Image 1: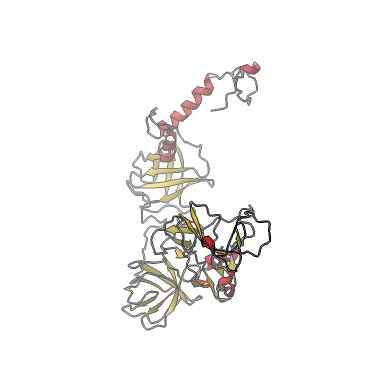
Image 2: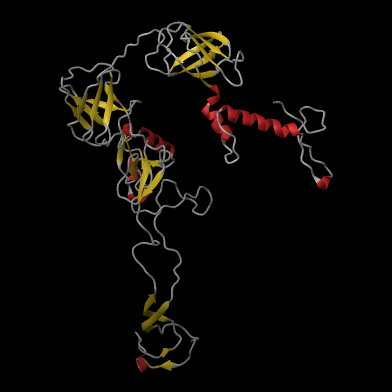
Length: 456
């Protein structure tokens, strides 16, 4: 099928344009071929997949292509070494390199074989060019033939036993298996018969008695304990394996350790990138996370999280971290400076989004915790003043000129002589009553949650 340009246009590659009455522009006229031919092409593909075109589904072309039914055929003859197949439309000699055919054999072959596709015959061989041997093709079993630009069909058997050379020898290896009798992160594997030496490639299976919660080792029979590491050589981490799981361990002489294959996948999942913070309503970290509780961790056991800490912009010397005056406890620390680092401690804190130069919380350091602060207090209540002592030492003029003798009318004075109303009070006792819910900190209504950080 070729491209059909708008009706009445001579340019074979002319585009279609929309009409626009406001510009007086007429839209393209669609020729019948542009509508009919694509439909027929699509229907031909659907029917070649042995499907019936139906308006109820607009995904039939997708299903047809996915099924690859148009490249599947049953052998139509009983000649053992000349497999004949027919396709509609015929493939004949229109093969292209890499074209696959899937064929169900009618009988077993007995030696070198040809594949006859719609009357066009070519050799059926292995990719190496080797001829097929007896029983490489089996009656009722599907095989694949891929056109090779060297001029023959490459044979790809799906049936076991077909290996381009007749008889196949299967070799089975029995991997030693034992139940762990050790403690958490310190496995003990007593095999019978005993393993007396570890060499490169020594492979064992051990069913765990406890969860893996960090760097681990294993003692095999009477041999000295050796580390168990991940495939990249890093120590195991919490959540890498669980009670009852069978660990497949292969000894690496170069590392002097067993490599563990079969890690419980951590949802890079689901949990987010290393360093992401997750909140949980429970009081336990789940696999792949750690509580943000200021714990000291070995860098070697958490290399990705330590790399995140270094790049985070919120890491300080541990001496600064542990100094309360600095308020650095919501940052990481370098730990001992060589082998450890410290997690932030978010316990009991509220989170605030980083200002990041906006100016709402200017002057703030990313690694520094911020103390509580009380803003303007507005409340309703009353104020009572009592025990006034007036100071007659102030000079006139007085706000009120009325005079009283000392002690007259219950007006107290700390000196003898007349007291003038309007003098400034020398001292007084006041009590304020406001309808406020006060305590030792400022806080909104809240619910406690536990902060976790995604580990690597």
